[in-house]
Length: 371
Image (cartoon, rainbow, N blue to C red; front, side):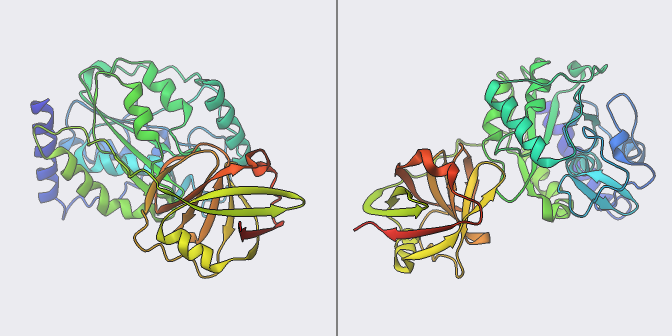
């Protein structure tokens, strides 16, 4: 293990000294990276061949490369695609390229035997079914030999607050015992979810280091952040897995809210914190409901909540109510969600959970304090 980290840190130092000639922000533009695999040298591999170190694999899954997009696909409006210079990149393909540009290694696209749908709503439904039934999509056969790698990066988009099932298909195919596994991902502003834990459980015997997560709308921030992240997690010869995340247990008070619409109602028991106190001060409210990504219902507040000393992160599950500060959303979750940053816990449904999915999108919901 010490030898592997020593090699990687040396590569980081060498490349940082050579930054004036090989900028991490200058992605190769001679060919789209989607054609890359561990079997075919990429433009990035050719550009940084002198600095490439043995023993590093950067494996990633992306819709770009696993979806038959039309030629006129809207790159600007599609979170899975990034227009950079003259070429279209998959978001996680782009992140993989940045990692390679920083420390070298081989890039491998995790490719499913059957492509995913172009329509994202269909992708959501397919992924939900795969997760619910534990389906591991078959992958395209490759000549990848994992035994030659000591350090494996695993990249993916966050789907339903977790790693997509093709990632588990890939991890199941190989023995990761004694190897170092490092996750990286892109997300829609809710963080890495429970994906780090999922990956750690799928690679028993491996050392799993701190991952990197970036919001898709600010993915180019990764050009500066990835070298800093790699330097932080790999510079120590005796690097250790990240400490287990411990969140404070919510303390429930005696206040309850009623969400009512069309003769139905939900009763929510509130957590005792500054955010719920501010929410109560705004009541009564009548707000339109908004559906989001097949697992939550949102209500947008005009002025947002003063969260005060309330936690800005939490684990949320089916029936939980939370506040997402960046978008001023009071949010019900009708599917398990897991960990998220910038999410303040508000409470949990105490009765009427069976009606939660029935809240009509665009329909008005009245929120009052239960007397």
